[in-house]
Every structure is written in C-alpha cells, then in structure tokens.
Length: 319
Image (cartoon, rainbow, N blue to C red):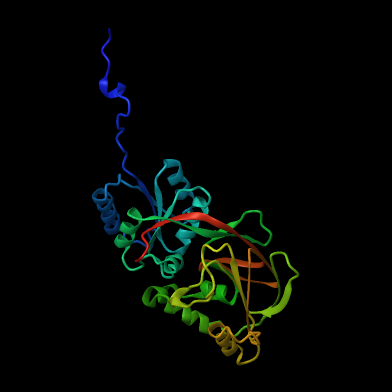
C-alpha cells in the first residue's frame, strides 16, 4: 500500500495562520520620507504583520488608483498616510467594500482624524493604533457637482461659497509655517464679498430661497482649529447637517458668529441649520466649491446624499 502523509490526512490538522498585511498609500509630499517608511516596516515586523504594500501617490493619481491596487492585492487594511485629500480618495474606493481604512494624519487640517479621535501628532503612534485596532463604521456622503454623473465622496463636509474660497486662496507657504492659522488669514481677506441667490432643498422638500455667502453640508462637526461648525452632527447617524451663512450689512459677520456660537437665538437669520438624508443646492452664479478642505473648482449646483455606515475605519479608541 502507498505511504500516506499523516500531517495531511489527520482530521482537524491546524493550518498555519498567515500574517496580516497592510497597504500604505502615502503622499510623499506630506510624509517624512524614508524615516517613516523604515519605522512602519519595523512596526509591522514587531507586531507580527507581513511586509506592507507601499504605494505612493502622484500628481496624476492622488490615491484612487493606489487604493484599487491595494484592494486587488487582498490586504487586511488600507492606510491613508497624508492629508485630507489622500484620505478622501482612499475612502472613495473602499466605501462599500468591507475592507477597512486606517488613518495616519500628515496634513494641515486632518479633519476626519480630528473628528474621530485619531492621533494627529505622531505618525508611528497612529500606525500602531491601526495595526492593533478594531473597526468602526462611519457614514459616507456622495456628492454630484453641476449634475455630473460621476459622484465624489466626502467624509467631513462640503461647501459652496465663502468657506471654499478660503480653501482656494490659502497661501501654501504660510500654511507650511503656521498650520491652520493660514486659513484664518485667508478668511479675513475674503470677508468682503457679494451674496448669491440660492435655492436649498432638504429631502426633496420645497426649496428655501436665500441670499447666501456660503452653504455647508456636514457629516461631522469639527473643522481646523477645533471649531465645531455642526455641534449636533455625528458621523454615524445617517443624517446630513446643512448650514446657511447669510450675513447682511456691515456688521453681518458678527451676527454669523453670534448665530454659530449661540444657536438658541432662533431669530438670527444670518445663520440657519437644516438636517436630512439628502440636500440639493442651486445657485444663480458659480461659487468656489470644496470637499473636506480640498478646493475642487467652481459650481452652481450640488446634490448630496448620505450612505449609512458605508466605510469601516480601523483604529484604537481612546479610553
């Protein structure tokens, strides 16, 4: 009789467990280069993970193609190492797939990381928290600009008007020197300006008509500097929060500040909040447009809808 392999024929024989593998999609303009790469490779080794798949973004492909490559490789987690633009591109590909995203914040705003409590001070510590973390589910918002068929994803907020003009005209050299305070400087420069007529419809209801300086749609609340624009927003509540800024007269922006930081005053028409699962915004004239702090261009129409818990994020929650 032929010899048999006992290891193969024994029922219940344990199969060796393959180490987990991470993909890192890194913006080389934001990272500390080879120092972080070497540190991450050592971290994977000490934590029992396989050698990572290391993918760098380019000016031509800021994360979409790299995220698809990571999915095809079948990795256990895809880490977005860069600023909010890198995070948004990776999330756009991973949403709905079940493959979790990890965050290693390296930008100026780091908006999503700030909102969910990811370490923004130490890339290696943030990486450790991904490799040893568990998954949370967050909502994703899909945005269609000027009736385009292709939708873009955002996780924190979108804006038409004043807030997007700030993102479009922030001085990069100043941002490198003073961080988020560069947005304050740009905001002061753009306080003067003309309002635009807007129609805003929530959940398909009859639109409200306003003369606005800005319309913002939020999936969660905080922006740069720790300012909480949407105090009631939660990233997993299946609800979008819509903020209309409509200052009137020379002291209009003081009314805006009073309305944002003292929301109990329902008579303040400079600031209005709405909430729903979808929103459609039409403007009489083109305005600057931003997604998660990235200036996208100009637009007259924005349609957004929320996808409940469409994205998994791998992280270690703060105790």
